[in-house]
Amino acid sequence: MTQNIPSSDTIKTLEELVQQINKYEEIISQWDKNQQVVVEGLKQAVEALHKEALTRLIRSVKQESLSALRHAVEDEIVYGLLCYHELIKPPKPPLEQRIHQALESIRPGLKSHNGDVELVNIKLPDTVEVQLLGTCSNCPASTLTMKQGVEEAIKTYCPEITKVISINTKNNNKNQGNIESPFAASEDAGWIALANVDEIPNGGILPLEIEGLKLILVRNNEIIKGYRNSCMHLAMPLDTGDVEKGILTCLHHGFKYHLETGECLTAPEIFLESYPVKRVRERVLVKLE
Image 1 (cartoon, rainbow, N blue to C red):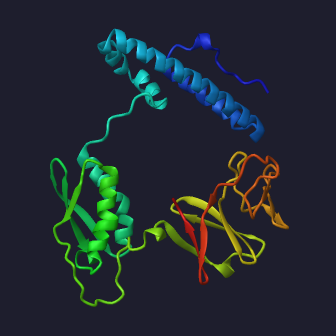
Image 2: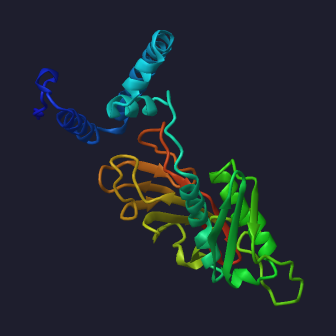
Image 3: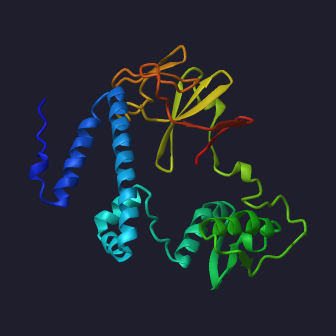
């Protein structure tokens, strides 16, 4: 089938160039995985060559005229290309924005314990004040919540901040039942209970969806594995495939996978995208990064 792709000498605008790139990507997405691997290898080699050339160009221009280099980087295309090749770093968002991003990243954990947190004050150059809300405000584990949750998140997003102070955290040692910080066991962070063991057909597949992510759980007696519900060939769903003797065959194009290892038997250099799975009594937990 002949593809109608404009030749390079007809490109007049940036929009047309982007359209041409998108057209090629669409064509390549229809190729088999082996062909895609070759194209990806070629792409990486060309990009490495371009990066080396740009590095030498920047070094030369800096020696001649630093102002000329700064002027060139003001062009959005030049700036984007240099960022893509990691030759310059985009500026950090403002401090307050990064603090809010940090708090947003831990908010689901706090809300799972009917708590929350809000920014109270920024004391430059290195101090942030926050307030725990809801059950986290008077929980006996509030100090732990601050240390392992809020403080760690803020310092990750904002390395310049060295002090994170809660205006309402108190060491409350009274017995208030089995209450603990949502961050009490950092090794448990990210684990989500998705199913009971008996819900996964022995020798079969259980499709699931969590926060827009589609997964499959597979079980062979006591061995349980979790994978993204996506064939490595054109990303077609796998849950409709046939399973026989631990081998899953995608119905769309016949790609075969060894479910215990995730290895593709059709193209052995690729594997299904796997997710860590553990069993807690009869519950099956999957860790979502």
